[in-house]
Length: 490
Image (cartoon, rainbow, N blue to C red; front, side, top):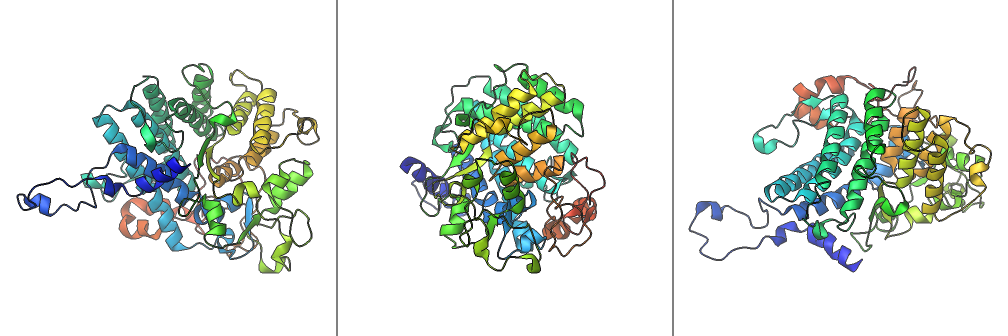
């Protein structure tokens, strides 16, 4: 952990790594105008580490994860400063979310360019994998966004065109397959200490790459079954060529070293910022109680006011709040109280549930729906340090061919990954999440379809963003995601 802590400090100060050379500073005009603290070239090892940590710090914190994705996805609700859960957004926060994604995408492209220039094949594959991960969350947040034309400012493209989500998904699937092909070359280049996610374990990166491709493919399964089926069956049909996560040791979790500013982001909101704005949602608590789920005391704490497990309504009216916030269950210690906790990018349990759903669809994935479903449950329980041999055979859990059971167990297993939970509830409508009763936009039947586009896209890139922005209603609704095939929802 001490080594990891030093790595974080090192990679957030990449400019300090560029050494000034000796000699007269007046020989060349370009040298006079070069700021040694703002280097034009940074090693890819540095930009890789920076991208991973910066993304986790800024997109999995209270502002960008707990306030909206975790609430819109049904895991959390707010008990104080409830605006975001009620669809009252902060324009500056939306601007930041947009900028964070493109900043990371730009740094990952720098990493890829450095890898190509120096024949670092593993580094190229890793950066391409994480670039696809970031792009997937970005497009699942806004829908159509600049992608093929983005991060080309150095080439003079300052008003990039918007790509359709359909085309972005196709590009992500193709790039993930390319990344796996690069990994398959068994390059000798070592990732080095810039790999703060898997500590230079290329095999785990390759598993993450192919597991992410499964995620992207299943997301398309209700819209473009042929593409989803082809991608999933290609991966499962050749495990040696396309290895995926199989156990919790393979989880793509960024583990934090602790110590400000490197505390896990959810715990930082509690300990560094002194906030107490979130509780576990009533949807989640009620489902865990209904299933007599052993994860309940891990996900939630009993309310301090009366010792009961009780969730908060998501985005409720002030008149619906209980008289004391002490009557709501706060987030469990594993997820909120540990400064050296984790940020989850992807879990092996999720992979099992993807395979279970694909098997229900009748696709050849080398495992039955029942076995994959039960394996996903086992992995989630194991990850959370609980066991219950009778749980899989209990009422509401026992496999009976109902795909909605896969959706519920997957959603439960995704706790703390608000981006993915929100995407899955929009795709499956399970669990059913109505619009917030306290929202200033009445008449909606479901939770938010998307985040608003930042105002800067209208003022600075209006010609390209106009159609996308114009398709939105009430900032959060209007055009559904490309893969969202639900009907009669608004």
